[in-house]
Image (cartoon, rainbow, N blue to C red; front, side, top):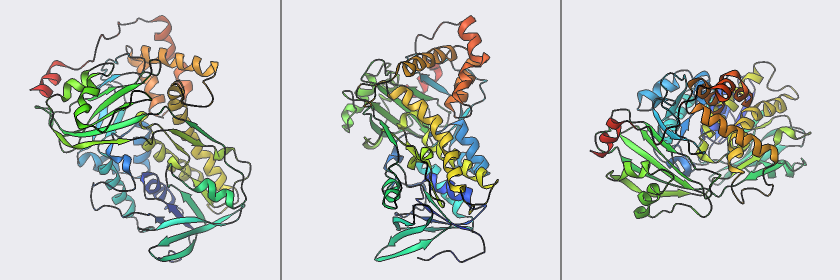
Length: 466
C-alpha cells in the first residue's frame, strides 16, 4: 500500500467504498487523484458484501437521487436499467398506502421516476463505473485507524492492511464510512469539540425475505406495493414488495417497539396479513421463498451537526451516512449520498480544493440534502413513543398534521401529488408544500373520494395469485 504517484494534482483519500464513498470519489476525481480505502473486498458481481448487511433489505433511489447519479456518472442509470433495474412511475407503477392510512390513486402523468433494483446490482454498477476512472485507485482490505494532522488541518490517514500500518498523506480526507463512523472520536482526539448529535429511534425492526415472482407476474412490470406504518397508531407496522431484476420480489416488513417482526420463516406471511391492510400477505400466500428471513435493528435516525461547529479543520469532510443515518423505510440514504457528492463537486468548481475554508464550505453544502431528508424522517418517527428524549414540540406536531393534509390532498389530486413528490423525492425544499399546486386543491377542491382499498388492478391481482 502506498500513496498515489504524484501528478501535480491534489490528492484525496475516501474512507469507505460504500455507495457514498464511490460517489464522493467520482465527484472528487475532477479535481484530485483519489484513493479509496475499503476494509473489505468488493465482490466481482452483484453479490452480498460483509460490510453492507442492510443490502438484503428493500432499497430504492428517489427522483432527486436519480438525477444526481446521472449528473455524476452519465450513463449509470441506463446501464443499471439494462441489467434489470426499473424506473417506476410514481404513482402509476405503485400501490401505496400513506402513514395516515390513505391510499394514493395511481396517476399516470406525474413526472417522477424511482430507480428500483437490488442493492447488490446498484453497488456493482456504481463500483464498475467509478473504478474504471484512472484517477481513482482502490485499496481493499485496508482499515482507516485515525486521522493525521491537527485541529486546524487534517493531512492524511493512518491505515492498516494486513500486518502493515502506515500513514497516507492527502490534501483532503473524506469520511464515507457510514453510520458506524469513528470520525467524531478522531476529531476530538485532535483537539476539536464534541459534535452536536441527535438520535430519534422509533425502535424499528426490519425483516426481509426474497421470493420468486409468483404466478404469471414475471416480466410484466408488477407494481411496487407499499403499506406504510402509521405513527398515530403505535406500534407502527408496514411492509413493501419490491419487484427486482431476475424475476424476484424483495419483501421487507417492519414494526416499531411492541410490534416487531421476527426472523421466524413461518411467521413472516402471518405478520404481513396483519398489517393495516393485508394486501402484501395476500399476494405472498402462494409465492415461493428464496432463502430465509433476515432481520435488522440498525434503523435509528442519527445526525451529527458538523456544519454547526465553529472550528472545522481544512482537509476533512464527512458525507452521507457519516453525517446522518435514517430509518431505511423512507428510502433516502442513497439519494442523499448522491446529492452530497454533487454538493462537494459544485463547491470545488468555484474554489480550489486546497484553499483555506474549502472543506468547511463543502461540509455545509453537504448538510443541505442531509437536512432535507432528516426533517422528513424525523417528522414521522419522533411521534412514536420512546423515540427521543425530547418529545415533539407543538410546532412539529402542527407540521406533521399539515403533512397529513398534504398526503390526503395528493392522494386524490395529481398537481398536489406532484408538489408532495417534489419534496419527498428531495428535488424541492419543504416550502413547496405551501405552493398553489398544493393549497388550491387542499382548500377549494374539487375533491375526489378517498380510495376504499389498495388500487391493485384485477389483472395484476390475478397474475400474482394464478
